[in-house]
Amino acid sequence: MIELAFSILASDFAHLADEIAAAERGGGTIVHVDVMDGHFVPNITFGPPVVKAIRPITKLPLDCHLMIENPDDYIQAFAEAGADMICVHQEVCRHLHRTLQLIEQHGVKPAVVINPATPVETLIEVLPMLHHVLVMSVNPGFGGQKFLPLALDKIAHLAELREEMGLNFRIEVDGGVAHDTVARVVEAGADMLVAGSAIFSSGDLARTEGNAREFLALARAAAVAQD
Image (cartoon, rainbow, N blue to C red; front, side, top):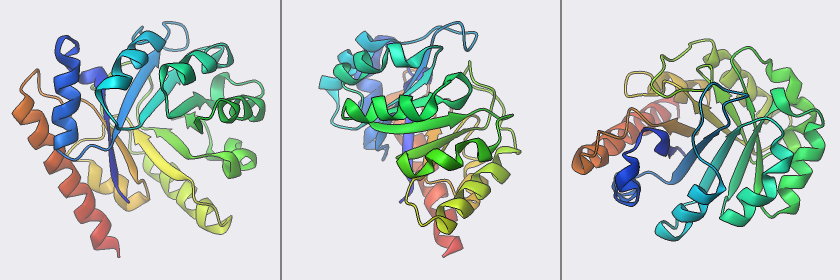
């Protein structure tokens, strides 16, 4: 099943509830929350209070992407704020297996993120634990970056491993995924598509809804063409 995880990083924060509702009307099924700490990545964005504020305004699952150092220190706070999924970066987790167990212990679906330079092989031992793997198709830290094609091989590799190992984890991709790149991403094997700049349109709610609908139509057409 192809899903749109719309990234609120690109939304109009002054009208966040309306922006989320518009993306949901367009077919978005996951709210993607990009959490940045100014240390692991060169930007600062949201924390648990924003997740807590979003939780009552949508029934959609909240996918919290922690681009932060020391994620173990914040898992409980994000879980209590209402996160349904928590993604941690392989690059910052000294004891990745333990971190994933901690996420599970708080009743949240665990996921791991890998940056463009991080090999898929670093995840093989934990793949059976994961709800999804998030492949970064840009270097994390800012929205609106250009898609890096090297991500396509990593997506395809994960899809092959999923089949070979008899697993059912999802494959998510984040970074530069837009109307002109989404077909290639789906063809490679991704089924959770993070998009922000391609969806939100500077407070134009009708345009946001239309962008989401068009984006999903392209993604699903690419998926059908493979069957």
